[in-house]
Image (cartoon, rainbow, N blue to C red; front, top):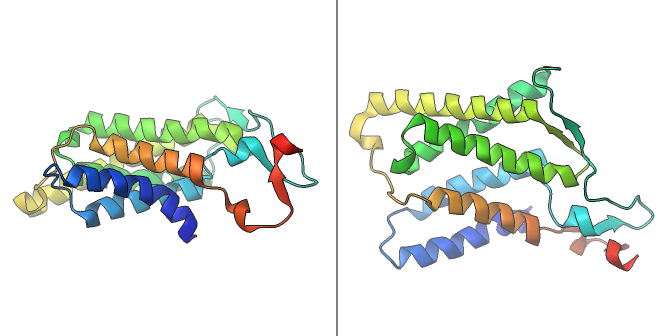
Length: 201
């Protein structure tokens, strides 16, 4: 678990440190809370990585590039997971405008939430999970609900919650760096026996 967290947090910490030297105003606590949340989303959704392409347990089926089930029909089946996917992105919709000034317009947070969800869904194409348009819809709804909660809370507490970071693209960098860290660095089978790369099988 610690190894998995480090794969997401370390690239973001390096970026944070480099930005801090240039007068960056984001606190390390805010950065860690946001990145740890992103890591948990990757963990819960089973976002894909290079391990899904190049590695497989000995004796198992070889993986192919595209191995996920794909559903492109909206609302064909609404199950419990639909509502859980809504809930999962509520913190995203709250944290982004809470931390970053440039995302305090609802459409920016909405598009960012949809883009974040789409990135995960695309990565799931190389896993044995399901790439589902309903997940994308649910996640976007969750981001919108989170934004609405932020607006309500900010109205109640006023200026105490309006001390933002002004970096326009910082949130995108944290999302990309945490995702790429998990995609390229996370390979739990380093700690297991009888596992070798597919390319050597």
